[in-house]
Length: 83
Length: 415
Image (cartoon, rainbow over all chains, first blue to last red):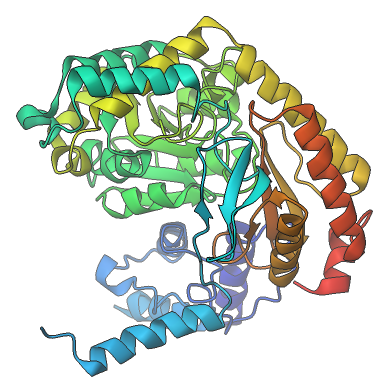
């Protein structure tokens, strides 16, 4: 779990934050509602997760709410990993 | 009548929230044609005050140019006031097609279609040409109208960090499985005034089989040595697949916009773009004025040359005073203040000094990036700029921000 958390946090930092952005990012930081990830940019996060964990997340499940924090994303990924 | 007290209260509450957040916008009434100096009634009810205008998109100073006004009168006389129709029923006159042909030649494309505005062009173009097998890869700072247009389109969306070519390349590699890859960018970014790296984008597009879309609204008419826009400025004139631009800024400043580019894409817009199909034709008076604008700026580069001189002079003046400005070479010169209240206070004091500028803050720009966006015009003369710089020096000294960098301003005023 910790490894997944680190992996996703690293990706979010690299993909969405500018180099001079020193915002503290944790597993509970709101990503979408906090304005870090916009709805257009969410697609790259979804594709990253699908590739990394060999899963398919249906569009209906890839809602802004389900992607809003790293913790929520972990729940989502685990749901499809098991499925 | 079903506007209940409950409904009214709900809407009033929303308006109050906007006010409480400090985001309430108020119009200022101008009692003059658009120009370098205008008469502004502000606050409402005050006697109009003559001020130097540093916030219009009147880059070439053509909004009230006598020859443009005369051409508009001529159009009014010969083609009437309105067409009372959309384009494809009975709203296309000979002059509409003439303007489209002239724009095609000016922009170095294959064909052009007029829209009521560039907002409408951007709202309609993506949905008309792309489908769910495609991907739109946009710069993260593109204009709001592009964001809206992308929302209406079924193609996949993705974004790259602002002007980050490495990131764009990663995205192009990632989306090789798509039918069409469309890179979407502004030519000049309206809030920061920086220019797109269009030569690098075109090179990446060739390498990864992608098309290029540029909204050149803040560039058409003056960027590039003959004013053809950012494609000319970046040495890729004639190589852009889709350009959208406006007649509402440098090109006369009235209204209207267009999609210009590959002929099949333009034809698809003519067949399918909803803002084109379902809104009224651009008025003949505007079309006639715009034809004259293109004629004037194709004859001589005098106006864009003067704008370039003004831009360089203004950037030099503000740097010498010690203001923190965004680097670049467009006539959009943001004075960075970072704090929203500070931006509003400085703008208010500048108005008292006879200089009309506006503070921009969240949500128009990101939080902590508040600024005053100054915009140059070929209508400004050196005296206007000297006077405006003197006012900035006086007001900047009052707030103790001269010579301070970003970190120091934020330490003093917060974000």
